[in-house]
Image (cartoon, rainbow, N blue to C red; front, side):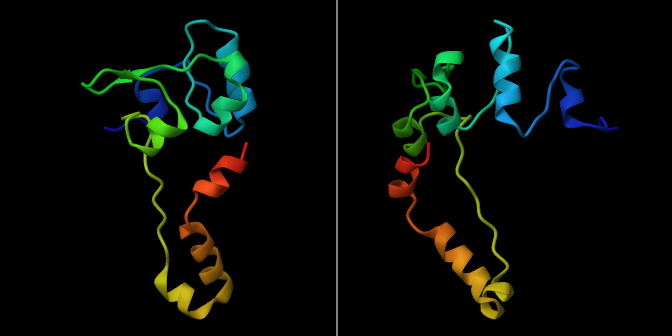
Length: 114
């Protein structure tokens, strides 16, 4: 039997939230707490949190734009997969526009989002 919630499979003291500020508040109050955040959010709140280096067998690596882009911060950094309904892009100009924007090179945009 699978647990009712994947969270409950490992711990009973987990707080789930889509609001990163709620998670930062919880993590910053407990020196033994762990939280998972996107890199851009961590960079904004770095004074309140400590990043964890991960070692995938080639030495410990801290998260940064470079280590994430070069797939060195593994397994915590991951590519973003976009699944597109091809039929919708053929019949809806807005679906095609959103898909095209999403698939455009992100590097210039990433630097400005903080």
